[in-house]
Length: 225
Image (cartoon, rainbow, N blue to C red; front, side):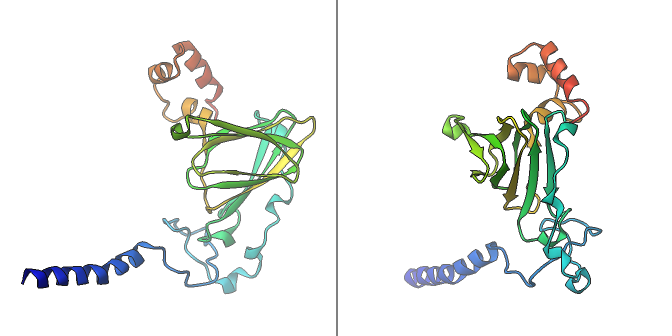
């Protein structure tokens, strides 16, 4: 009797286990495209779809990053031209997006993190120092290389990184993400420009500096980036 019960339990596990696995995976797409209806409410999987018949063909194409902005308009000496789902509705639910970043000489894309995407970059002009800081598991190892026009780099999801124009001329890069909305956390702005602000004693203790230093840094980021 006990043997029969055990056999029945094993049979049940063998039958149900694949079903549970299937249930845990993403469903296959039910249409070729899901052009974002940006007037709709954003959900966990993206924006609601608008009929492709009313979207025309333009949702497949974009000229947004054909030109960049003025890097000198930003104190960092860099300008980011975003091409995520809000700028390119055709990528809705496809899990991809792009950015173009232009740099003045000495300009930087400050240390930051993309919490929802791995980044692949192509330097299209000039030469950029690309720095990546590993997690505590890697001993906070710092990886870096000067990447020149035509060369590429990859930054794993969630790792802090930056780019810095080490050349004497303007530089530019195009990066792609495996998310339609990769998110960005600028480290200096997060620490010193949050709203409401992180208490000064917390930062003073964590950074091992006087409160006056923390207050000075907060004043630098009070207006954001």
